[in-house]
View 1 (cartoon, one colour):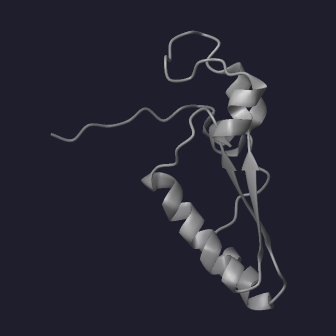
View 2 (cartoon, rainbow, N blue to C red):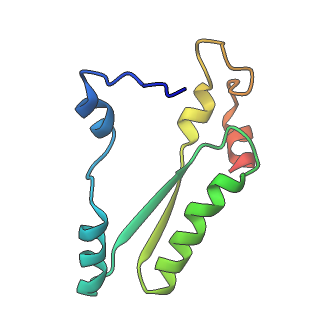
Length: 105
């Protein structure tokens, strides 16, 4: 049985909101071939003190690019962790103190 997903009218908003730039594989490869160091960023939510396997995939790729001479920046979203889930629906996203966020980071 094949199910279909809903295609939202605001697809462009969903794919571009919070994104500074979308690049294709071809464009990324061309940027790497130019030899100009890139600045690559990855963000983390310090709601918990642990990382999971999903983080490792991105971190390994960043390490490979760093070994080629590119700059890697890791961003810790401390403010979002302090807010938690204001709706109260997620028990795993409770509000944290600044000290707890720093410890998790």
